[in-house]
Length: 125
Image (tube, rainbow, N blue to C red; front, side):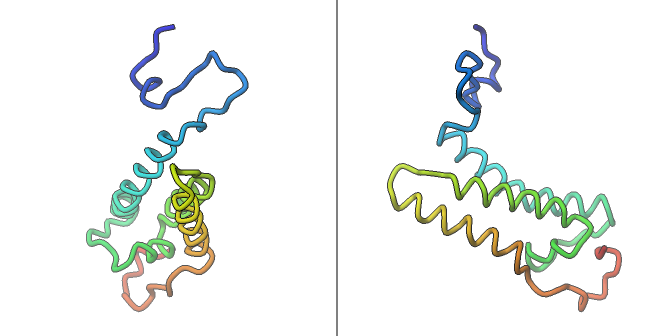
C-alpha cells in the first residue's frame, strides 16, 4: 500500500483494524509540541481577526476572558489530556507529564483574574 507523506508522518496504519491512531508515543510528543507552539500564535491571530486588537495580552491566561476563549479552552484541554495519557521513556516522564496535565486542567478551572482593568472593551465577550 502506498502511503502519503502525512500518513507516514503520523504513522497511520490502516491494515491494523484493532488499534487506534494515537498509539505511538512519538506521535503524541509531536502533537503536544505543535499545540504548545501554536497556542499563542492562534490566540493572538484569532483575537486580531475577531476584534482588531494588535498587541499581545500580558498573560496567556488573559485570553480566557476574550472572544477567543473557546480556542484557549479547547487547545489547553487537548494538551491536558495528551499529557495525562503520555507514558514516556522512563517513569519520570510519566510523572512529570501527568503533573503538567493536572496543572493544565487547573489552569482551566482556576484562570487568572479578569482583565477588566485594561479598559479595552473590544477584547471582552
